[in-house]
Length: 225
Length: 225
Image 1 (cartoon, rainbow over the protein chains, first blue to last red):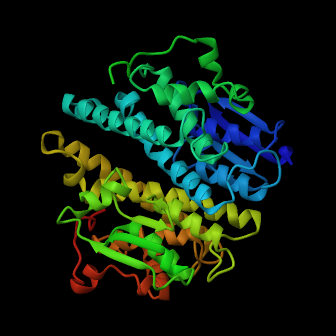
Image 2: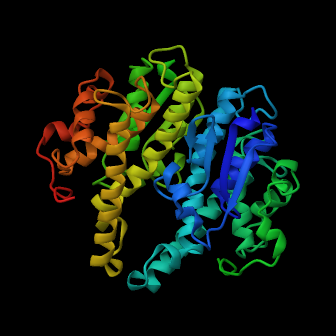
């Protein structure tokens, strides 16, 4: 079945990474994939735009179906292949509710992270202003503190919703991204512990952004957050 | 079971409406619900903040589980009660992929709609600028044209992904909102047809925003889009 799947992706993109982790967890190694460069603008290439008119990555294909929303792709893979590889949605109502809730909240976390890290990318020069930057940083800080609280509630060494689930698939790449961009391990100890718990997981390790491996030195955009 | 569910909601909020449509489709009439006022700031009340720290509506409770992300609540209800009421996720892989894809894209549509309609709400006075407004409007126009194309692809009189599904549950409230705020029926004929196809559906009619019924006259923010 992996042969019927293909992925266009970019290195370091949390949405792309979500789909790759899911494919690993579901044991679909061997799917066709092609790494595109954001820097070279390849996410706006004809090849991408034909399948994803918004010009974003990932673009995941399953037979003739195109899923370019990462959450949709992950849900689809879990629904269609429930019994293959890792079960990524808990069955008990309370745990399933929590996993779905955190999964969708992961979109908000990533949006708020992007708004700070890629501020100059998203906001044209004439619209940039100090109050806008400051506000986005405060919003992100409050969001990250919320996740600290969530992790405190589940206890140390725990995943977001019981066993490893689509919640972690969705949220971990953003957490990794936050630390890559300088988030303080001291001020966000629960997130740091969560990061260190998951970064060695096989599905995550094998799909680690290649350009992060090539240049392990990150950035310090978030260091004062 | 409806007795074990409760909803805090606001009139005219697409995310709240999604959950209400799902509850109707799943025949959970009789759940406890409480209408809060955005104007009075009740979405930032202690009652809401205790369950949803971001101070947003809806807040849906299923027994002790809190689901305040509408997509999570709808997915949860469909997963837990697949055989009750309307089946909201198609079973064939291609249709399910399309339904999930359009459902998640519905979040983007709603975000872009909000960015225009509630510009002054989201952007503090000192950060507002004409280029920002213009850009948000262009982004929304392109987004709406994309949905015109999607509807053209499925053909007239069709839902977004085969039968009525979570895609429609998610997207319809935003489409209704767009017309409420003045979207041109002539320039967006496919969306207008889709709107008129679905607005009479029982689950949608019964959950129609009460303040829209009280003041049927809408706004013209989007009339030139």
